[in-house]
Image 1 (cartoon, rainbow, N blue to C red):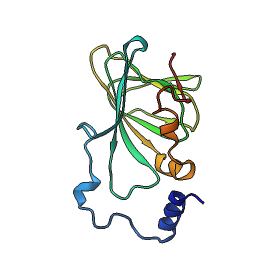
Image 2 (cartoon, one colour; image 1 turned 180 degrees about the vertical axis):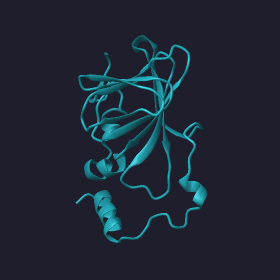
Image 3 (cartoon, rainbow, N blue to C red; image 1 turned 30 degrees about the vertical axis):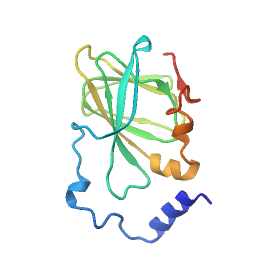
Amino acid sequence: MNPDLLALITNIEARQPLATDAPLAAFHADPGNSHRQIYRNCNAKLGIDFSVDVLDFPGTQAFDARVVRIAAGCNNELHKHAHESLFYVISGTAEVRIGDATLTLNPGGLAFVPRWVFHQSKNLSPTDELVILAVTDFGLTKAVLGDYDKRTRLAANGADVLDHV
């Protein structure tokens, strides 16, 4: 069995809280501030200009919280991945493509993206940044599959990224 998955299962079965020694402030984050950037892509020809920051909460194993920032009038790549995602629009207006469906989300809007479904977010504002909180089960999926994101979306010309819209 994968050691990361075994560690996750062992911690769950132990029924003990993780990060008990972390200060209370470590469990709070302001998504409006900058955090540890894990991904950035800019391709003017394709209208792509966005970044992804991760909110490093102590003790998280199964999910992670990410802040996606998309420049005015731009989008991220049309892509898919093994983890599920829940998108919450913090500010701006988003057009979110999920498979063949397209949703328009305003602040407070919520969308779910299933595993392996092609999706893309577009900022509908010509002047303001779009900010989305994306909560994923990346930690759980990574424990099962290994670091698949480095082999796919985060890799140059990754197998799960489409360069066209």
